[in-house]
Image (cartoon, rainbow, N blue to C red; front, side, top):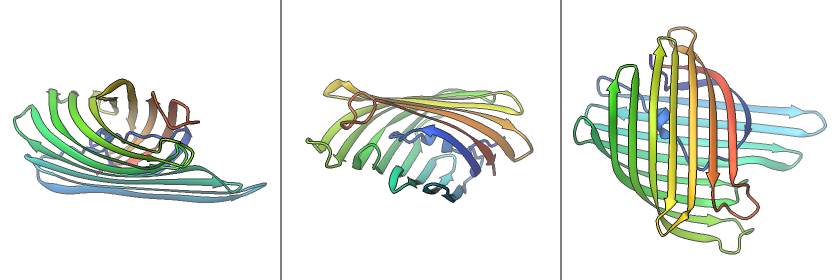
Length: 250
């Protein structure tokens, strides 16, 4: 069952301005070279005591063969009520994998993002490092990545020290479990310390559980947790999101 796929409908109950994009949930398994991808667009306008406007768009495209993988993700979200923005953020992410051996790949990525609620005008990342396949059983897969990345961050006017240029590590552990033919569990956790100041670190964890309904349709529930030891002034260190929805796979 291909569980990483095209989003049809998403019901979100959240308090989140995620700053680490989880590309592990977007990788698609394929036995031959081919393009895959998904596009979603959700919007709504609600009129009651206040005017509430919501829009979310997400697109990803991937080329994968036995030697290389290219993955591009574009994710935008905006929500406004009573003239005040509650969510206004966007991320663009490009990743490349090159197979060295059956268990080792080299990967590199570039990423650009903004998050008005987290007071981030711009954050640019570029990084590279090895990715290790720890297991390759059909019913469970474990991966470990150890990358080094350069970060350029420009905060909003609310911060006195607006610009930061740092090197960070980015270590992640990812696993996919398929206990039955109708259930899949996918989880990825990131640890990203600043190399010259280890107490300045970020944690991010995403866990999704998918229940197959029909051949290409599944119900998905996800929990995302993010922690930033040194966020921009006034921003909470911990943020989280809980979401449920339907997924179509191809």
